[in-house]
Image (tube, rainbow, N blue to C red; front, side, top):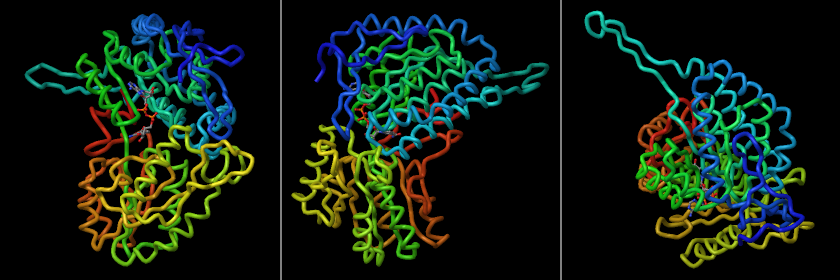
Length: 475
Ligand code: NAD
């Protein structure tokens, strides 16, 4: 897929020491609109010298940035939040073009990142240390919260605005410097945000951006100047990053693949619950790390299955730019092929395909990577549609008799990222929240994503490493 640079196709720049730089790489990759297959630009796989130059710039900038007054760092973040607000439409349009999600979802993507920038403006109090007087006779003790040096962020394709913004604003405002490696599949909206960071007045070298894949990531994990790494993406890559970075003495946090359950009890509000399942299962084409990909119907709630299927037919599948679209295309041709393979695997494994989105037609966008809402019932825990992350508008339904069985099932799943319970019983909700072993728990809320002043977390599979206490994905 990678090839030499194509003449006449716009190029994505690197950011090194405050300058947008054209890469000298011989390896480039096209960025493709998932609805139209139009090539929007091409992104370089940075050379070793370019990665080293970014590291050197970050290491040099750290010497002065760490001593820059907190107020000066905060004022850059204040300017950045205003710039993001003022440029929202521009970033959203690019994000939808390169990622495929609807304009509303793209706006949410940028907005959730903007909230982290707002949170970064509170660093004055967040950075305070601790002081104890007279811990021994006439001896006082204090702790300082100090920046640790050059930090790195490695981000996935599904939230090209929010996830980079989870990382670098908090790290930078704290006095660290940063090397960002955005997804090589959709870096355009990330780069628009990076331009805004420059416009906000960040000094050269404080934020640097390199593009690429495994080679660049491995260079980050092994580089002596990197002190901490924040990764978001798949389990296979995140585990690799965690292991390699840790072996090289870095502080690493990896947030990885997901499989989120919604447990539906028979006393739940039927209409609200089914609407929530449809929104959380098929919104953003199921490509959210907090999407609900599994519904567990307990007891008589299984009778609601036909209504769920009827509701699942209602979201409008179309290009993300078309007004009223609920479900845009999945991200790439390769992703679509993988999803189609898993739907077929579900059929072969004996799950009941109650709604099949494979044949969906979208007029005007014949070459888009569309898959319509798909519902499997009768899913068992050994089926591939259950054991693998599908990351698509495919909802798997399991049926169980009791809440206890549902809790046991969710807790046995190797991935405890997010979960929801739908019930009108306070006692059942209380039992669920205390016995469930999953990072984010929603009660009558399908996508329980924390706000930036709470850490994102996970149980068992989706998380390796410690999370910083001062906000989501802080390094
Ligand atoms: P990915 O793992 O393929 O890519 C993530 C990053 O790793 C990218 O920057 C990519 O360039 C790099 N990378 C890819 N292959 C590599 C390799 N072999 N060696 C080193 N680096 C490599 O993930 P993706 O497909 O872009 O994103 C989707 C995944 O992210 C899903 O599994 C989703 O669940 C997960 N995700 C998790 C969270 C969370 O908070 N838990 C949030 C968003 C997405």
